[in-house]
Structures are given as structure tokens and as C-alpha cells.
Length: 497
Image (cartoon, rainbow, N blue to C red; front, side, top):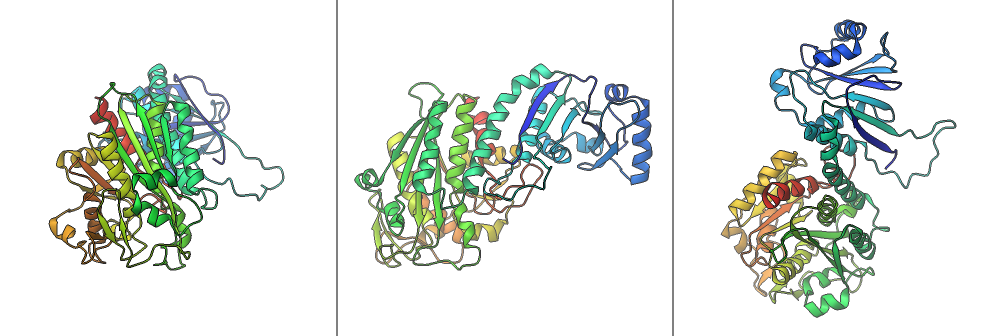
């Protein structure tokens, strides 16, 4: 991260130097206790400045004023909340991100006592989560010095609420989620010469400090297990593959776990079916699914989630050397099913096939969710703001959709019909690894479904949302850390309850 950020909670009271942030609706009225605290001079200044600047108090609008007479502050920052209807459906995380964007690099006191809205301690914690996520940036490889005399300034926020003790009690859980999202972003943002399979596995092993059991499987073990599909993808790289299995045992002893499975292609050149040069540098992010799984395990373990979880990631590089797998090859997966390779750039499904088979066989999960930057086709279908959801279980799909709506990490359920399964039948093997250009995201999902053995399963194609996605009030990073908040919410609402 570029600068440090500290977040504290306190009651509404006198403010010293720094910024004071207040909130108004479209009538420009402050909450009564805030109006009393800032005084008549500040409210009069707000009214005059709003008229001069045509500030209407619309949602996600801001007005920055110099220090008003009678207040020992540097600036008064006014954040608009919109109409009464807007205030009835506040997204506290987004509001926190927007607000933090107006005071980055400064000391600020935020009067989170809103006109016409009861802000609970949980709301304040979600607000702080948004501020934390907005503050993240990835610049560790920039060596250019700042201009002489200019130093990086941290951000110090005091969130003033009616019940700071409740907010403080709620914040550790949201801070755990923030740390998980940031870990996922860090992994996606790292360059491929730094984050290759062995290094990725090493970073996943750091979860042992939180009580997560971590097992790293190297090439010999993968071969002994029969993971021929995953090993085929890895053959073209000098970097050896890894499968990492992470277990958080926060639920009842002996209770079946849920399983989270991630595609971790640390760099995808396309292999022999090599990609075009334009944009290939983005393929360092082809491990966004694995990053999400590691980040989610970090979040769940940090907040001591009352659930048993298995997280498994297949980590490889897909490179085109003389030993690389070829179009026309037939490989045997761990399940014993054979796969005709049509295109070596359809590699992620081969990696996932073996990991899914291993997880459902070894750990007997209640349900499985895999996440993968799997297809460009899903970006064509849904753009870069919504992930594709495929599932063999309506109840599981509905729960994931609800968690996505609650967190703003939207998913859209896509069809998974017999025609897509038929499209991957092969003349020479049990299946082929691509069904052609049409319906590419769906035929990829149909391929994965053949390895689930009817365990309740969902596949999230996150190619559009995991990297280079649309910036938002809580994310200005290339790597989004998408999915950590969704999965944490899914666990919180449907597993721990």
C-alpha cells in the first residue's frame, strides 16, 4: 500500500486540526446534533457555498469548504446523501469509499450521524471497510522519488458515531474481510516473475499463522495422484506446478466442509496456441480465482468463522517450450476421463478438472464453488461488472446470487443445458477441452461439470471482474480482489447461521 491508514471510532465531540466531514440530504440539512456541534457559522457558510457552487446534496456528491469561523478545523467536507429515498438504501461500504476518496492523505473526523438515517455500529464498520478498500494501492515497484520536501502522508480517520463501542466491536470482522480482499489484490497485481507457482504456494502457507492447515502438493505427489490434466498444462514451463489445500476448521468436528476451488495460472501465454502480443501482460492475472480463495480463507480464519472450509488452488504456468502440451494431445485426468486437447489456451479447465475431482473425492464437501478467470466469452456476454454463474443446484445458485446482491459483487446465472455438454464430446477421447467459439463460457462450464459427481456445485467465471475491471468507489486497483466479500457473505448468511 502507498500510504498508511488508521481508523478509529469515537463519539460526536469537539474536533481539532484536520478535516471535518459532515453529511447532508438533498435539503442540505445536517442531523440536528451535528448542526449543534458545528455551530451556526458553519451551517450558514454551508448554505451560502451550496448556493454559489450549485451543490444540491445529491448522492455521491461533495462540497469542500475552507475552515468556517468558530471551528478549529482545516476544512469542512460536506458529503451529499441524496433524497429520502436514496437514504433509505445507503450502501455503507460504497459511502465509506467515496468519503475516504475526499480526504486521502489527511487527518479527518467523520460525523457519521446522518439526517434521517439511524447509523448502527454495524453500518459504521461497513463504512470503515469501504474506506479501507478505497485506500489500497499497489506501487511497491515504483522507485522514482517524490519531489524534494514532499513526503507520503498517511490517512487518519476518526468515525464519530452515536455508539462507538458497538462500531468497535463490529469492526474486527469487517477488517478481516478488508485484509482478505487486499491480499487477493496483492496476489493478482504481482508481476509473474515474482509470483510464480512456488512463490504463490509459499504465500498461501502464511495462512498457517491464522490457524489454517496448509498442505502443498508438488509434482511428484501430483503425479502419484494421477493429475495428468494439470501436469500437462505445466509441462511447458520451467516453473514447477503446485496444488495447495488449505483447511479452516472453525465448525463442528466431523461436519462436512464447504469447498472453494481456484484456478491459479500465474502466467498464461496460451502455450502452443499462443496468444497475440497485445494485452498478454494482463495474463499475470489469470490466477484471480486462486487469489480469491486464498483471500477468503484469510478473511474467514481472521474473524474465526464458525464453519469448516477447504480451499484448494491449482497453480501452474502455461508456456510454449519444446516439451509443452500440443493441440491434438490426449491427456488422462485424475478422474480417469480422457481429454483431447484442441486448444492449449483452454488450459484453466484442465487445471480445475483435477483439483475439483481431488477435493470432492478426498473431503466430501457439502457443496463446491470454483472461481476462475476462465473465458473471454464471459466478458463478451456480461462485460466487466458482472461475473458469470453456472450451477447444477438451484438453491446454491440462489444463495450466491443473494450474497452478490448484498455485497455489490454481482453475478448473473447462465444456462447449463445438455447441448453444451454434447458440444465437448470428442471423436478420439471422452471429451475435448473446447467446444468452439460459440457459447464458449457455457461449454467450459459443461466441461467442469463432468468432474463434479453431482455434488452441489457452482462455477464463477470471473474473467471480467477479477482484473482490469471498472473502477469503483472502493477499488482503484487493477487487481480487484473480487469474490472475497461475496464468499464471506455467503458463509456468514448461509453456513454460520
